[in-house]
Image (cartoon, rainbow, N blue to C red; front, top):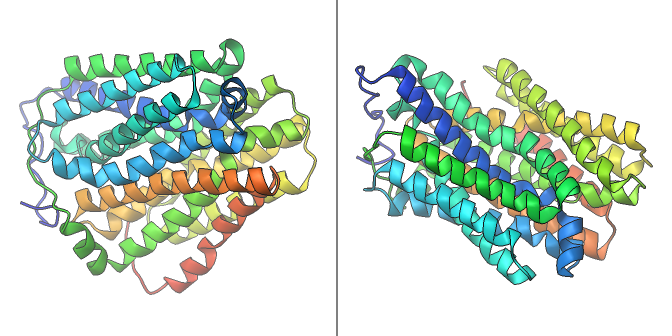
Amino acid sequence: MTATDPSPPAPAPTGRSPVRGWLAVLAVTLGIFALMTSELLPVGLLTPVGSDLDVSEGTAGLMVTVPGLVAAVSAPLVTVATGRVDRRLVLAVLVGLVGAANLASAFATGFAPVLVARFLIGVSVGGFWSLAGGIALRLVPERHVGRATAVIFGGVETASVLGVPAGTLLGDLGGWRAAFAAVGALGLVALVCLVLLMPRVPPERTLAFADLPRILRSHAALRVGLALTFLVVTGHFTAYTFVRPVLLDDGIAPRMTGVLLLVFGVAGVCGNFLAGALVAGRPRPAVLGIAAVLTTATTLLAATDTGPVTAGAVLALWGLGYGAVPVTFQTWILAAAPDAVEAASSLYVSVFNLSIALGALLGGLAVDHVATAGALWAGGALALLAVPLLRAGRGTRVRV
């Protein structure tokens, strides 16, 4: 059976304990939270890492670029390569790898070993996220699948909006190495939880590389959704990767940046729940609103001299918009290709992580060769390009 087969995999056996299934779901959620926090952790720590390892902030941005690029490739590659392997084993190996890589980063004496560790994190993120997206159907009774899937993807969203601020605060208090060590320990805890709480999950369908271009050709709404994901997520990370240097340039104390990023995170959680309630049946207005909010927030931060209060207000607006991104675009992608969910999810993970990488790269070029605020202007412009793309794609239909 291939990923293009419209028949879904068999639901979890009715005799399986819902409690045991939900414990497994929570273990997967912890794993994906640890992985996505690992990928994005350097966002709040670029300045101290660059200073300690004697590289520029733009070069330090490679800690976000490298795992993003690798995850973009590993998402379909790991899915295909492990097509006949127990999913519990694959997920456990990947989350264990990310735990070890973060611990290695915490003890690294130079920037090159950190980049090697970041490469391994990229492999883990791409493979784990792709496989975790459809695992709920195998763990809980059919009536719980929707909620379980939302919980698992909540790990992605929570890492984006809370993991980075929490890691930044820990880095401010104990140093950047302590932050990396803590996330590494979290990955190992997730490994133990997966081994103890998750049942064996034999693979039921395989994905071939040939399926991917065929699905893209046959689903116009999927192509539009992936393009919108690319513009909005690239724009966000072009700006957000360098938000700490921007705040420091505005005269905000280093210890306040963690607090301000936490404001961003809390607003992001609110944006996630708001989007979850509003996106059903209205994906286009949701994407339009996200693009408008991200463009407005980055422009305001670039164009004004901000103190802590003003910066907090702008970051709250920004967090509200970005918090809606994962649930909105994931909903679009799954609705655009309901007959090829696994393949569509794999493509979405690739584009999302490629966008993280390119955003960090573009932002680094702007910071090193133009000005720190240049990353904000470039990010806002990219997010704004989603508006004409939405207008051009009006002919495609997405039902959610």
